[in-house]
Each structure stands twice: as C-alpha cells, then as structure tokens.
Image (cartoon, rainbow, N blue to C red; front, side, top):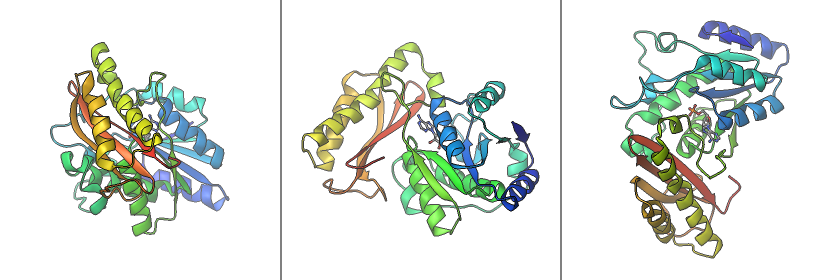
Amino acid sequence: MKIIESPAEMQRFSESARLAGGRIALVPTMGYLHEGHLSLMREGRRRASVLVASLFVNPTQFGPREDLDSYPRDMERDCRLMETVAVDVLFAPQASAMYPPGAQTWVEVTELTRDLCGASRPGHFRGVTTVVAKLFNIVKPHYALFGAKDYQQLCAVRQMVRDLNFDVEIVPMPTVREEDGLAMSSRNSYLSAAERTAALSLSRALQAACKAFAHGERGAGRLAQIARLELERMGGVAVEYVEVRDAVDLREIATVQAPAVVAIAARVGRTRLIDNMVLGGAE
Ligand code: AMP
C-alpha cells in the first residue's frame, strides 16, 4: 500500500491513473477502522481498479467543545487493516496541508443540514461537505463510498454532488452492526461496559419502530414515540432527538407514504451516538 501525504502528489497520482484508464474508488475515513469502514473498502475494491482510502481527522467538522483532541487514533493498526482489503493508496494528509493559512472557502448544503445533527452541531456539516469536496478534487474518484450509518451526512454529500455537478458516483452502504445490534462506530471505544449495554437501546428503539411499521403503523409521530419509549425504557441514555423523516430530503412528514428514516441521536455518558433505520426502502 502506497501512503501519500501531499495533496499535490495525490492529484498527480490520480491524474496518471485516470490517463492510464483506471477507475478510482475513494473511501473517506477518520481512521480507527472497524468492519463498517472495511465493508466500504471491499465494495470500492470490487468496483474500481484503484482503491484509495483517506485517513483524516478533519478539524473543521468538530465543534469547539467536541472530541477532536481525544478522537481515537491508531495509524499502524489502520494500515494493517487496509492491507487486508487491498487498499492501493492511503491518502493521509496533515491538517496544515488540507487547510493552509488563509483558507476561506466553504461548501455548505443549507436546508438538509439545518435539523437533526445539524441543530446540535453548528458548522459540523459545513466542515464535512468542505472536506469531502476537497477530497473529491484531490483524489478525483469515479466512485465514493459512504455509510448509511451517518445518514444525514450521506444525504448532504449526495445533495452537494448534485448541486455542484461533481462527476462522481456516490455509493451508499448499509450500516454494519455488532452481533447484538449496536452500530459500529469508532466512538464506541469511549464506552464503559455499563455504557456499552445502555447503548443497545438505540438499535432496540429503531427495531421497535421497524416492527410497528411492519405491523401497519404509518403515523410518523407515533413511530417516533414508539422508538423514544424503547430508547428511554432501560435508562442511561439522554435523548437528543428521535425523528421520522422523509428518507431522501429529510423533510418532516406526518405519515410514512414513501421511504422514511427513523433517526436517533443520544448521549450515553459523555459519548454522543447516532443510529438510524430506513422504513419501506432498500437502505
Ligand atoms: P468515519 O471514520 O466515522 O468518518 O466514517 C467513515 C465512513 O465509514 C463514513 O462513510 C461512515 O458513514 C462509514 N461508517 C462508519 N460506521 C459505519 C458502520 N457501522 N457501517 C457502515 N459504514 C460506516
């Protein structure tokens, strides 16, 4: 696996790969890899002749009181895992190379990022879409793979690609879970044993909503309430939001007529977790 730190070198590499007829897949990550990340890389490997993974803990998507400094990092282990899924190039830039002094341009998806996680994390999605736009210009991928685990992020990236005519296919990938249902996340490493148990309430709440939907419940408010009751039943979880929204544009809905997403954000101890499931659709 080749490791590239410099954006200019990455651009040169990708340009020559394209000129040679290569198809490039990109999997952007913040590292501390788990099976969720690896599932994206395997699909990228399947689709493209050149598989690029990026590892960049992007400072602009963290708020001032968030976990940028404590975010888990283990580059050696990440490299070993990437080798197992045959990543060709790891793009791992320094923050100073991605944001040289004087940078002043942002990419912002407005409506889609206002609610849900956007409401409690001001500036987060602006940081995400800005760094993803930069990664697209640096890596020049034909495909970029994103997990449905970060559902609002996936929607925002798709919207950005549509609005700004990026010539890249966004490939959404299903959420990979632990055997007991907990959605895999680098931040799960923050959880104590008791918190790890409490965190199961998130997936259980989503399953409760899915079950009610399967039994015919279509009221968005009632489905959200069913999920909220399950989320709060065991204790140890501070709910930030439980919402049932349109699965494509995340607008509020009264009844589920087209695919909808049940989305949850909650704190378990000091750790903020998110999870979601789609009702009546493929994702
Ligand atoms: P992160 O390193 O957390 O920024 O995630 C990098 C990519 O992996 C994003 O596209 C995430 O949506 C995706 N991802 C994270 N967790 C999971 C998971 N449990 N299942 C599938 N994809 C995931």
